Amino acid sequence: MFTWDEQEIFPEEALQHAAKLGFAGIYCSEEYGGTGLKRIDASIIFEALAEGCVSTTAYLTIHNMCAWMVDEFGSETLREKWIPELVSMNKFASYCLTEPASGSDAAALQTTAKLDGDNYILNGTKSFISGGGNSDVYLVMCRTGEPGPKGISCVLVEKGTEGLHYGQKEKKLGWNSQPTRQVIMDNCVVPVSNRIGKEGQGFNIAMKGINGGRLSISSCSLGAAQASIEAAREQLEVRKQFGNYLKDFQYLQFKLADMASRLVASRLMVRNAAAALDAKTSDHVALCAMAKLFATENCTDICNDALQMFGGYGYLKTYPVQQYYRDARVHQILEGTNEIMRMLVARDLLRS
Image 1 (cartoon, rainbow, N blue to C red):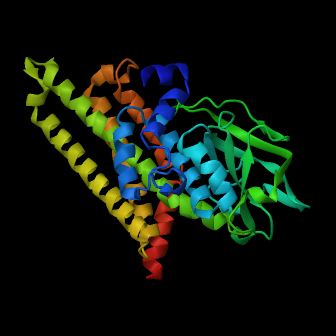
Image 2 (image 1 turned 180 degrees about the vertical axis):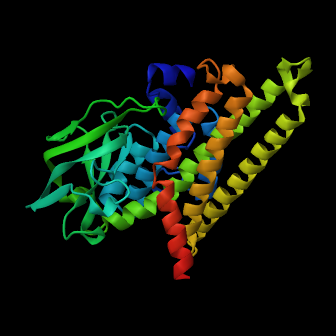
Image 3 (image 1 turned 90 degrees about the vertical axis):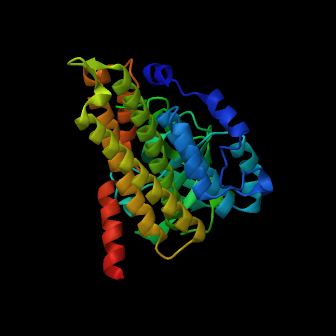
């Protein structure tokens, strides 16, 4: 984890090893090689993996979401071709929704796909794409029709397609074990047969994918918080100040108890939302938003509290808690900012 972060290594071999264990298509059907588990299983897996490396696990969650989209909404031809490649991670996948001028307002995206015979001609730019430039498959949300969400479709674009380009690799606070670039389409020719779902169904596909994505990224936050608590506990047991071990100071005991309580509460919210998503309950969107809001904020705070317990050592890159904090902080921004999560929860409450 330290080396991947410091040297900005994208650990493809490690990810492919995870795929051999069934972790690249966790909730894809078994028909073409998926693991066939539920979202609650995925949450448990992602939390455990994130204790080892949050950044790498986060990419794996995105890859899983893309594989599921192809499996759930793709044609039989696309499923047969791509699911075996994705669940084995012979091919890596990226999700392309965000644009320079449309982040939270995703339905305002401007990337276009103009029909030209049996092809779409794609033009536009996607921003903050995890795996950008390295991934083999890009699920691109693009405008095939009217303004707004009903005019958006989802198209699978293969690496090497003429007109597909990438921006420079972004320099980030965290998530350094996965590359992030702009994905640029300049008269990019893609067969209509590469469309995922029906024309105009793309925004619906994107939102269904991102509900699960919110739980996956929250699960990564759980792993970061769990590892940070364990590191802090070990520090309290060995570090002495004023002639006493830190574990004997009641203030730090209470702080550790608060951290553990917030972690368990966060975990229960995430697992509850995962169960609701599996069951497709009427309130699953709000529950996913609540879980993402609560877990990512509390778990980032837990990482920060653990860093504080280390004192000056916590600020050094030779100690792990700073990396857990850096990697977890972005979870309040992506998969829908936590401000948008509050909007979704409020909308559900007021509609009810």
